[in-house]
Length: 356
Length: 157
Image (cartoon, rainbow over all chains, first blue to last red; front, side):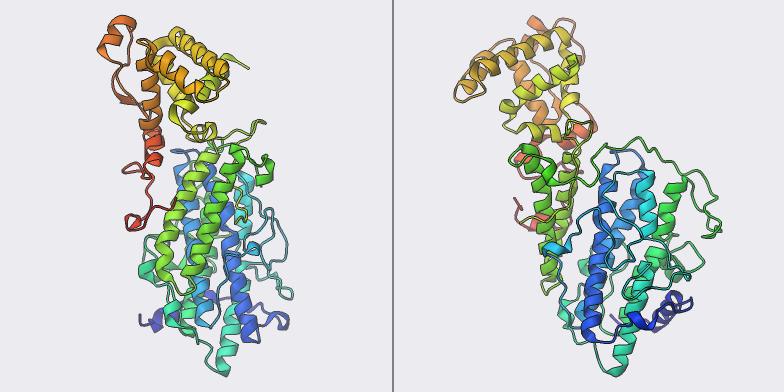
C-alpha cells in the first residue's frame, strides 16, 4: 500500500499541535530503548482491554444499548491500537512479546510507565468505572510535563516514541523488520478503524496518530481524526464518548472539550448491571469446585487467545482468524460466569489472570 | 430459604442428571428460573411441587449415585405415564430453550384446563442458551456468532 503523503502530513500536524512536552530525561536514544518503549506501548494498549471488557460484559443484555455500543467501539479500537503497536515494533526489527505471565496486569493496577496518578480496577459498569476510563483516555495536558520515563498521559508517551523514531531514523535506516511480519488491513476483518502496515517513518507516524487521535481527540475538538480526515460519520474520541455516558448527555458537533456536552439526554440505566465482584480472582473460589473450573476456563481461553495473537504478530499472521473465534468464546464464557452466585449477593465474573 | 429458591434448587438438582450437564453449567445459562417458571405456568404450582418432591426423594434415596440414580429416573420418571412426558419436556427445554406440547393423551388425562401448552420458545435468550448448541459444538444460528470464516477451522474444544 502506497502512503498518502498528504494524509500523513496532515496527521503529523494534528498530533503535534501543542508545545513539545518532552524533556531531556525521557528521550529515546537507542534502538533498544525504542523497541522497549514499543513493547510497553503494546502492554499499555492491552492493559485497558480487560477493564473495558469487564464493564461491557457486566451490562445486562438488551439494556444500556448506547453505553454498550460506546464501550464496545472503544475496546475494539484498543485492540486495533495493540496490533498497530505490534506493527511498529515489528517494523523496527523488534519482536512483540504478548503471551508471558507479566504481560497481563494484576488488577488493581497502574497503567504501565504511567505516573501512578490513579489505579485501574476491574469494575462493573458504574459511574466510578467510567471515571477511571476518563482518566485513562484523558487528553495530554500541557501543564503536566512528563517525569523521567513516567508519563502523565498516553499522548505524552507516544510523543516520546515519535520523537525517538525521528532521532534514530535521522542516523540511519531503522525500519529493518520483515514486511511479512506486518498484520495487514485485510487480516483485520471487521475491527475498529484502519489497520496500517508500517515500513517507514511516515507509516509509523500515521499508525501513532491513529492511536492517539482515536484515544484523545485532536486538540481543541471532540472528534477523532477519522472524521476530520476522511469525512467518515462523526465519531468522537474515546474520552468524549465516555464523557457522554458520565454526563448522561450527548455532545453536539459544535460542543468544545471545555464546555462539555450540551446535546440531548444520553440514556443510562446504572441499575441494569450484573452485580459482579470487583477485581475478582480465581482464589475467591475453592480449587476443584465447578465455579473455580469455570473461572479457570475463561482464563485459559484468554491466555490461549494471547498465545495465538503472539504467534500472529510473530510471523504467522493467518492465525488471527483463530484468535477472533476465541474472542467470541470469551464473551460467552464471561456471560456464563456472571450468572453464577458467590453466596454474598455478588456474582462471579472474568478475572483475566495468567494460567497455563 | 424461601419457597421459590427451594423450588429452584430442587429443579436444578434433578436437571443435572437429566441433562448430563453440571449444576454450574446450568446456572451459567441464566435460564433456570425461567424454565421453572415455564413449568409452573403450564402445569400449575400443585403438580410442579408434586413433581419436585418426587425428584428430591429420588435424589435422596439414591444418594445421587449411579447406577441407582439412572435406574430410578428411568423407572419413576421416564416410565411414568404422568411424569414421563413432563420429564422429557424439561430435558427438551434445557436443550432447545423451547416448551414442546405435552402429548394429547397426557393432556386428556392430567391436563384439563391447562393453558400455554403450545410449542414456544421460553424467551429469546432461551433460544441462545439451549444446551444443544454446546453439545454439538455449534452455535445458535443468527446468534452467538463464532467469527468470520470460523467454519474453516476445526473446533477449538
